[in-house]
Image (spheres, rainbow, N blue to C red):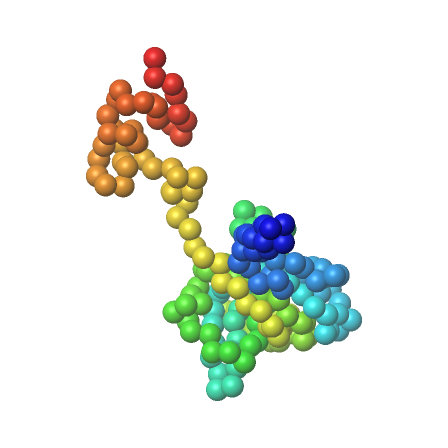
Length: 184
C-alpha cells in the first residue's frame, strides 16, 4: 500500500510541470547574453538557455533561422518582458518553423549551444549577432491579461450581464471584488 501511495504521489508531482527539462533547468554554467557578446569566440560551443520575443522566421531548404529579441529569463525560463531587452540573437534549427505558429511577438525560450555569430541586416545597418544551434525550442502559450486571476469586469459572469457572480445581491456567500463576505 505504501508503494502504491508513493507511486501516486510521485506521478502527481511529476505532472505539475509540463516544461521540457532543458527549458526549466538552466545549464550548469548559465552564460548570459552580455558575456557571450563580449567574448563570442571564447564561449563557442557553450550550452545556453536564452529567450525573448520572436522577430522573424526564415525557412531555408534544410534549416530554419529565427531572429529573437533577447529578454532576461525568470527562474523557470519564461522571458521577463517587463525588464529591458539585451539585444538580438538568431536560432538555427533543422526543423521547419511554420511562421503561422512561430509568429512575431510570441514569447519563446531556446536551449542549445552557442555556435558563434552571424551577420544580419537591420534596416541599413549590418550587425554581428550570436547564433544558437537549438536543441529545445519552447513556445510559451499566450494568456489574456484581463482574465488573469479570474478577473472579470463588473457585472460580467461570462454568460451575459449579471450582478456579481451569483446573479443578484442576497445569495450566500456574498461575492464582491474577488473576496467572499459572510451574509449578515
